[in-house]
Length: 521
Image (cartoon, one colour):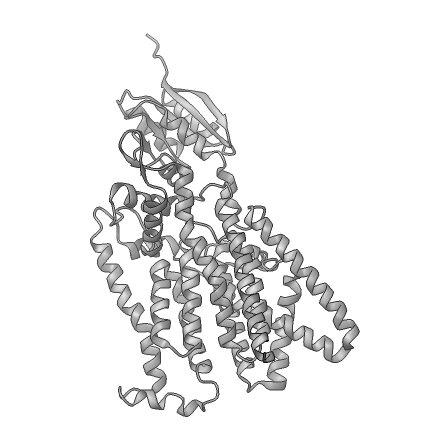
């Protein structure tokens, strides 16, 4: 049997093994008993109302395109919805959590295979890059922590990687369709567009002179080849944008999606000088451990590798790809550091594919440099260190799958939300619930058929004034997270004529019953 065939079989066996290990970790993350973050609860509520109540146009305050929400709603319909004892279509909170997170978990498994294929397309002469890219993607605690969520990033990211893959293979239309799907999952998917364009231009036909690369494909359009391919890449998104706007215009009693997205996500300013260091640390801290203990070494080696490539073999295909990826990462970090975007660590998911590819490349470069300059003995020792770091990364991946990680730790704050919602649901019909902190969370966890009146007020004084003027005789309750200070709210209510009694305190939440104080005769 030819040795090349044996090598081919072993490579693909390793690729499959890597995907299976990554799948096991993501399935573990899917089944861990953690609650939704506020954003997850909001998106899952829209999906649930579509699945259970038939609200497929998703009316309400929504600032994201609907692709992820429809995927989650379909999953809820298939794997969670059932007719309960009252003959009503419903599901329990945990069933809803599982179904809403399932599409992202499956997409994250597929992303491992896509990253391996992308590495092979970008670096076709070095299969080791694909191997290490697969290992890093499968075991990254950062990616695992966000693999099983109801967030819109879950579908945006694999579609973005798919767009990069098709761009690297010189398939601009397919790349454009994948990019449009990434955009339809989350508008930030457009960050992949410039990366796809540049990769398509320099990678798709690396052995053809730049000046003649697209001449054959341009004959039937009259456009120069590169422009035709760029048009094919961006056209699907240009078509998707008005389609989403048309869908948005059909949603009843809903603000404009794009206007709300701009209001919620527009930073509107550069950062102040006092924010330079804190924001740098906010963005760097999630990065330096995103591949476990060895991340710092791999990240530090990237600029050394780039400098070496520029000096020794700047004209090579691999060096050009390295330079494109590192430029993308640097621009991405600078934009998010110097413009006052929210410092949510999940925003770094967009940079993760490029970072993983660069770390795989820098690790292999270090291996070659050590072998060349320091000999076989030290190279063997470094191999042992590398194996230890992979084992450490595997351990970090297991911890992330079990939610023992600093990434996405906001979900741990809501451990008692199901019991809180059950307590509120047990109150009499039409009970008034003054809900300042937990609007999105209680919207999901109280269920699609909740019969209570939840009311939001922004300040203690507005709550007290409105409560005093409301003649409704229904019972009134005030739930809140236990770590919030209740005094200013309860004092305002007391001045408005309400006595408060704490009736519930567990799982990180408390409930106060509010009663009008007896008036003196």
